[in-house]
Image 1 (spheres, rainbow, N blue to C red):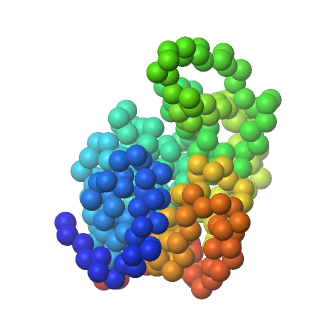
Image 2 (tube, rainbow, N blue to C red; image 1 turned 30 degrees about the vertical axis):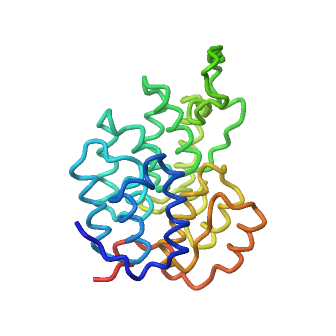
Length: 266
């Protein structure tokens, strides 16, 4: 599928490529991935159609297409993401993406995956559940785990893969807490949440100051898409520069909670 990007500003394209590189090491080099994300910023419907087709046609489409559906998918597209939790090759990427989507239905799925036999999936499920609900990840709510053995090889990486170091929540503690939230009707079905706060343009901007740094790029990508490229914030910028960029954001609040498909040109 060919997309027309003649209207994309050069500076926006360069920053967007940086964002994609943070999502996946190969993302900025994959033409289709770059085109889909850039087309979404431009508001091209063909880009969204392409994104959905990539997810529907591939058993393991990679993180970026799944992230885009999680951030801006309609009810049908959210259901497609939930189905991918049943695909072993896509499960880790799907639960990671659903954490950025913020739906209570996804939190229910994450709760079930806390006991997944794949520790990587269980860690991502913990991270996603916290991102959606604001669950307090205190010591009493964590599984006691043995320290992973150190790799004494001279060729071992200096830093562990971040996702291997994510904490795992104790399933019973999460179940009790989530049951109380449900009893209090704090989370409405179909509503989107950021750490327990209903999604809005204001909540999106405030999240830059509260979420872990590894999640900034998804916020920046969503801001770029919802503002139609008017506000490009680099997740790699120093905090003072990022704060200055965020202070200039205005004018996209009415578009803040709509599915991406409602924001696109014909």
